[in-house]
Length: 331
Image 1: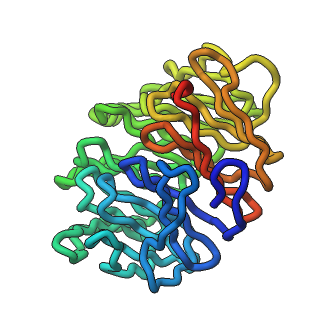
Image 2: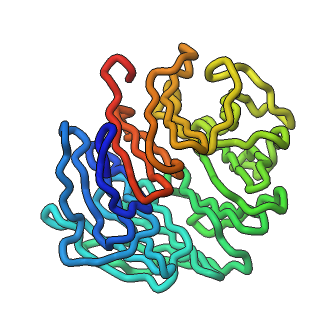
């Protein structure tokens, strides 16, 4: 993991920020999960779980940073809980296609081939709380902000809203696999993005569709704000989903662009994006100007801001990862 413009190759396959925004976790081919203090000028990594060797494919933190689900290359996962400064394994799940923590940090949803299971992590033990059988292959999971509902996206394109009190409601959308699920801050709306780039906005209370649309064939949706209706496409144009129309309301910056990945900073004022050539940009969305650019080795596969918006992290195709600090005037 490099800091700034340099850094060793460590076979990085996944990164995730702890919710407090001061710690970055990285994992990959060497089996070591490293924690980085992003507040340091040249952070020295420490092992998240000394003694473990895990080929990491994904990392998912609990909201308070008290636990982490470590997805492995073989499709299994380890649930690890923080205990006196170190993360200790509490359980190993033989199958975990995707996972999501509820806002309380104690409820964990895990998708298997034909079921979604709810687990409770309390007093150092992981116990199964509930389960929902499903004939569908789950691709995405997302809890509502109040933790009362779980949205389950399937490879068939369907979305199931599971009220944890027992009620279920199916949302029948496009037949393309679900690639992302985003609840609005009040939980009243759910934005569903499909692999074929169709976007649907749902009323979660009534179960009715508020709108759906699809961008032009030569562009793709890269990121959306938590309001669920503001999107950025690969040509760095900004859109609002209104009814069944995508209405363009501006560009991030003038000129022609073709980006591959993008992420909004919390609050939506900054946007990080990268194309196929390994160049990373940070844009001022409000001021419509470029703030930073870096040329990194290898195509950038993943980009993410810290929760406080002070740093950007990348995962690159050649196995490197970079942690980049933004100046005070940019935040």
